[in-house]
Length: 132
Image (cartoon, rainbow, N blue to C red):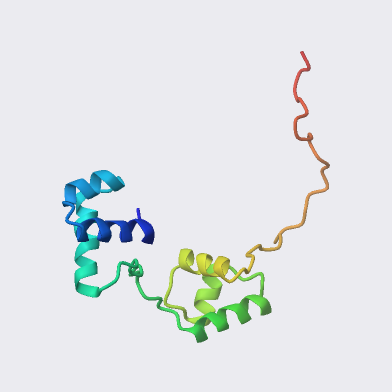
């Protein structure tokens, strides 16, 4: 879990005043490893702001994302697999699904079959069966 910048600055102040790692950790409710890591970052980099998380870079370019958005708008009933094949995308269906969510594009297919002529069997909360 990341700690706040304020708490990081308190670690630096405590260490500057000569506090030990253990004392500082107990005072701020963090591990001694955290104190050591923040202090080392301050000494080497001169600041204590959190580092950016290093995730895997996207395999899609901005152009790919724009193509995907355009294709979904053009053909909203395409499946994820059809989109991947049609646009020759280097990603999996789960990745495309997450991307569509980030883009705010809903992904609902129209019914491919007609509804039956049967009416509603029972409403929500309505008891069914023998009536005992």
